[in-house]
Image (cartoon, rainbow, N blue to C red; front, side):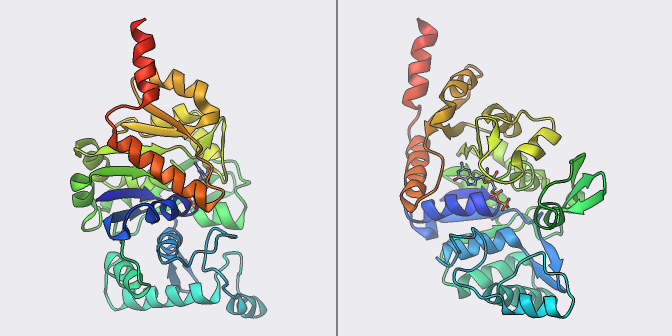
Length: 323
Ligand code: GDP
């Protein structure tokens, strides 16, 4: 069983590659829910949706979120009625938010609801929210504290970030199956998702980092950072706000407690060599997933690296150490 920890857009691209390389039923995806929000009275879980859609073959590749070919009639009508429309929900997307909200109102847990929706969409992989408790990523800025979606989508991550916290995390526990999946995995992969606001909340759920430290599985991550910036979005800004270097070294630092292997871009070959001095296994690959083939190739590379006891690069490094 391959276990993946992920957020939404970067993670969805990565999962898209994996699902084409290994049978979906061998995949368990543990998903960030810190971005969840109440929107028009509905419970929206952007990362669970992106992962469910990608596994169902329904994700819009152009947008990177939402359902492909979706229409936006309801959004337009809500705008006409004077409601906020900064968070874009397509009509088919909205059906999922309606169903999730209905099932939650009936007393089902987020994991039960997520499994039910995934099954209805023909998804064979197991999709697990990180927790069934409400955890909300809050971003402290000079204009006050914002939810992650307010910071990211509504305000285009233009506000300086003072700090980030995960409201409700103290009382949250891992959703059923999360710790077992990590402990019994053959490989645990951290998608190239935002280390602070996508992977960060998952790691902050009491018990999950501990499981990652204890699992006999190899834990590997793909860097969402190339050089000194994120491929997209605010990961760099948020890493800096957390006191992390915006580089592959910063990614390694964020995951230092349990990371066995870091996959970085070829462009970071020099920084990779430096990182290897710390003893971390680092593999260079093309980590930009622009095309379907690139997604598949990255998935193949990380899985073959995870299976091999040491990479060529590290063997070369060991050799240079001895000389
Ligand atoms: P969010 O929940 O929508 O913010 O999604 P994620 O956290 O899963 O994805 C955002 C992260 O994905 C950003 O930090 C990007 O740098 C990273 N990312 C996006 N596209 C790519 C890609 O093609 N390759 C890699 N390595 N990272 C990517």
